Length: 168
Image (cartoon, rainbow, N blue to C red; front, top):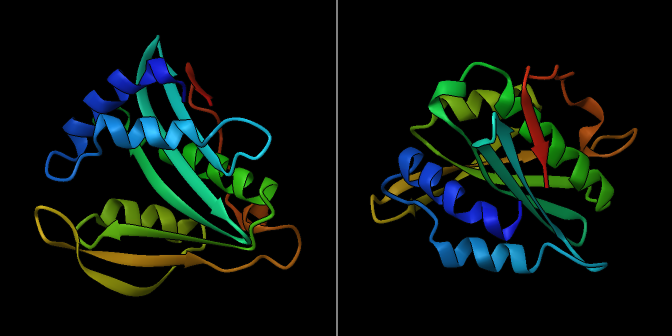
């Protein structure tokens, strides 16, 4: 993701998460820390025909990474794009030498929970009232360390989505 992607990402963010969308400042802050030799963040966008149809982000600290966000435009649901974005984040976590990946997911977002479970994430707890202003609980999920090559080692194989390009 680059600075010029922020406006279309914000539009998609507001469509998908109207109650708890990230602000422009939040994206700028994340991108400000995602470049350079000491970067510990990876933010991606997926484009189809020049239109941003998905995005994802991960932050690494020590040997732990946190999935910050994954979103896919509704007209691209069911295409495997969410899986591709998550697989790219897992590869980034492996490159950052993270042994464990955490994330929070709205308790009412069963579609996302199923995606994470397919990749081996397991529920470990809740954060009450995490998503504001709706006061919606978050399900905390963790991908445990893989014994033979990092978090991406056991990730499902993900085929390409025709015409959709993912880049940082």
